[in-house]
Image (tube, rainbow, N blue to C red):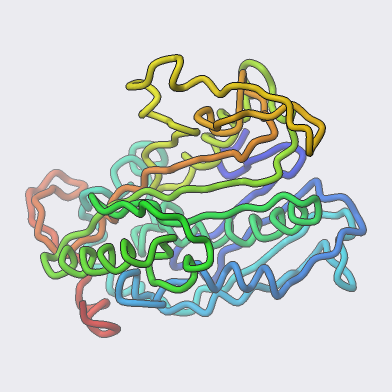
Length: 332
């Protein structure tokens, strides 16, 4: 299967490059007659949109979504849904002087090894710009899940060494780093500013909680629910690790500590778990408890520190990031 296709029942194909005319996604497998709220798709894209603060990329894209097929009079038709997002804020010429440079932390080298050609303008297909298409498709899937009572909550759990210890969902959208802990959010923002002053970048951890997931989803061996979720999340360019439930901390726990004990819930008339160290799954199948996932996001590769590298031809050099492009927009 092509590396640009993901999913089976709900299948998506993303396309487009960072500095091409547009990016987009085709969604196949959606049943007809389902209501689609275009404003909600746009809201999710607005949340992702760069240039919202000095803590993120200054590229200023409106990211206005256009549905060109698969939806009629606000409902799905059963045919492929195609969503388009135009690229407007481009300065491709700024990348011309580094077109032969193997930029540290970027995919130039590996793309050249695989394809023999690479769109150096902003990273082409390897750019984080591609994630806008995923967000658009995810906003469609999210609406279907919410119609079934499934709720997805995502937030920044950690930036560098600073961790959000409290989880107050009501404050996630009230700070630039989208942390669920306002005190920690202020520290995170200050820490990012300090790193930026050094001309550097920093990574972090994002946590995802999926509520009201029915028990029984997933397969017992190769298509475990954890494996499918990890495959989707690891396909995001900046993600370098995925953990479910206690994740790597489970390696330090005793079995008596990690085991989630069963009990009978009289109120719900069902078997429940007293804790959720396993993160909502057992044997690759959902338990009915919240699915809890964390992803480790690497520091952005585009930094203002000079780093030694070579050109495609092997000539040693010290590349300078396209800093003029950013300084024209917003100073650090």
